Length: 446
Image (cartoon, rainbow, N blue to C red; front, top):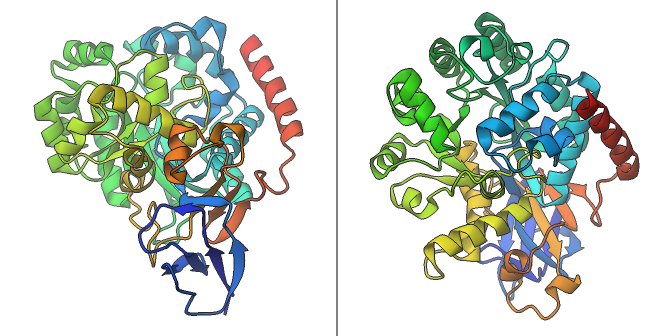
């Protein structure tokens, strides 16, 4: 029998009845140790007296490849549509080698920030990049990160009235066939799954109605989740009203997407009746606070959403609109944005942590994640409070959010340490930065 690990006497822990720590074995949490108690079974001890322990953070929206186009001058100070128009020609030059480096940077940055599960929305497929999902799976397995990777798609290009250039879209048959391929090859089922696949047309302004509907049918057939951008900007609302003679949520429902299989990125511009429909359908929202502020898209009405029964998770969004992949910083940004909107009595630091853990777990359909509880996966993030930013802190959990934690000291995924002493074992960060930066310069130069 594999030996258990007692994460002993944490400085702080986001769980009830775990004052003396957490016992994990075979990738699961098997015991919470209350004050005055010791574990029921023999266990190796990890001294957590200098650590604040929280559930592993879960990132519900990202575009890994965009780490190669951070702070690009041509795209700065632009709203969403012109921002996309500036970047699509650059992304058309993506190569497998550049993508592998971009994915490695994104996943590493996420994991170092306390993330244990991440999604990605990859929808750019220029010639030669047909194996994008395969590349992402390989990197995730190498780093030990739990992932829900989406097979994204675009088939409505500029010649058809869409935004993306012709060179980055694919035809419907190619998209659907590859969607089936990657699900069959990589999608794992059950509570121990490390790699899962979802289907994810990019947005209403980059795919056809036929592809939206056929994707929904395929997702139901294969029993996988669905993801897309929706209600991110008022421009999108106007686009849908002009092209489809309806609002985005009506269009989504008509395409067979308004259900509990779906989680949506952004969800900023829904009205009250639409929020109720989302809640009734069980459709969840990925709130992307930093991206929404940088692109000035607006702010997700999180409290109204939750009051309407809509589940809320957090996403860092693409590194070209955030421009980082730090999920702990996203927790703080969401806290500050929503606190300013709703006031001190409605939003606390624990709400922001909940969105990034239990709320995000609902978005990805993984109830065994996002909460420190017996039987759940042993996915944990441990932070030290030994930096200047924390000096003089009181409540250790509040300090993580309010004082601005940004780097985990330890991260555990499925019971295995994937970050040790603030570093990913075996990862040469300096070499990665050198190679990634060179690839980014080459891509941006065209």
